[in-house]
Image (cartoon, rainbow, N blue to C red; front, side):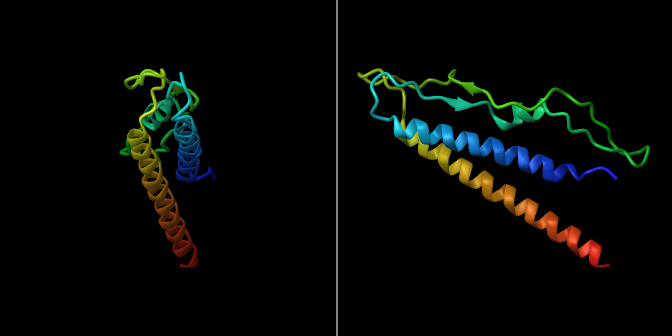
Length: 126
């Protein structure tokens, strides 16, 4: 029997969210550092496109998917905001919005995993 890929996918997103939270925290911590350039991570959708997760068709009428590469987390600096007079590109407002996005996505991730886990437990009790 193969593993349940939903848990693997949720773990990958949680890892990605952790890296993004660290990046946002680093940006906020360096908000007053002269010359500091804000950074962000590649969106999870782009990372997901590179994963090797495949859908399993147990019936010929099921949809199929093709695998791509391996998921990686890459820093990107292409969305640089305006520089302050000190050469710093950190916008505290944008970083706090990103931190809120990470919190919301992590809560959604854990809620989905919890619901799926409860569904599995209910199925096993039957």
